[in-house]
Image (cartoon, rainbow, N blue to C red):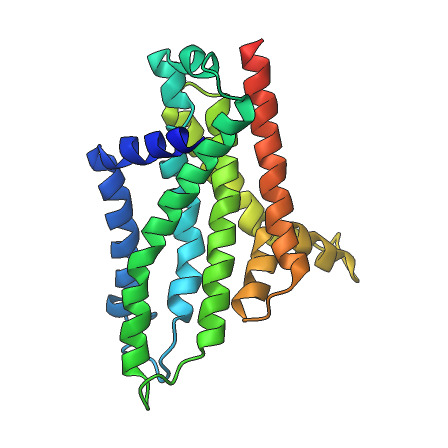
Length: 243
């Protein structure tokens, strides 16, 4: 499984696309935090990272599918999928190797944003006057959200040989799972406590809860269970193609 993780990392950083994806993410986050007046930290009254953690999930909707679209689709295009599954490696190890490789790429993408945290920390009056508990919780929530999107991206990549198709399907599914249920809960047909139940099906509700610094098992359990569900769907998809 370690060899699969290494292969994912090397193939990503051996192409210009990998660096472009990371650079695009950092540039967009930087523009919203420091340039655009409506969201700029410099134009606000408080030293806060709320802009980063409000914008990052929507960027993840496009970023993570861009990272994962080639995972299995590229194997199908090159005709190396048969060679991969005939190796003396369990199918589950191949799946988890690709998943962990993409999750590690996601973590590497998030590391440079620590510079933004340090900058806002220094801008506080007095220095360091920011809610570090909220920052840590937001990072945990953002990482868990990225893990869920990664599982969705692998699923769409497992049944499509076209990387663009896998990317678009993953974007639609990630967007719907993140915001779709929140929009659905606002329909008149849902009233009383039913609208809250619909909201809890979506990822945005649990991400917002963790981002407040209040980390509870039910929110972490949501992301872990949903990630496992889409990984299981990926395994089923790959098993059918093998047959």
